[in-house]
Image (cartoon, rainbow, N blue to C red; front, side, top):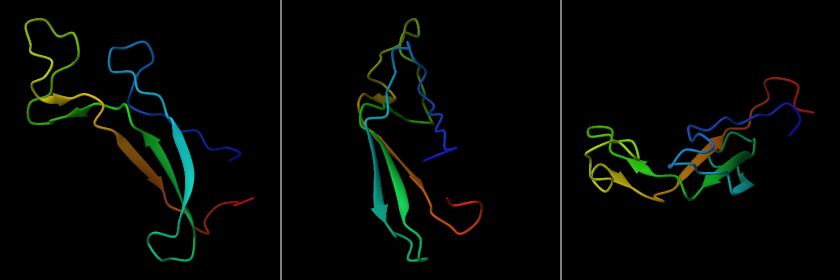
Length: 85
C-alpha cells in the first residue's frame, strides 16, 4: 500500500529478531464495511510482561518469562478516513 510503513518491535540483528512473513487481506472482521489487513510475524517471541527477560541477559534462564516463536498478528483496520487511493 502506498504510504504504509509498519515498524515492528523486533530489532534487526538482535537475538529476538522476527521478520514480517505474511501480509494479507483478512476481510471485514469488525463488520464496519471496510476490509482489514493482517500482518503475521510467526517467529516473534512471547514475553511475559510480569517477568520480562531479554535474550542474552546475563545470569538469566532464557526460557523463563519467554516463549520463543510464539508469534504475533497485527491488524490494520480499514476505514473511510484519509485518501484511500
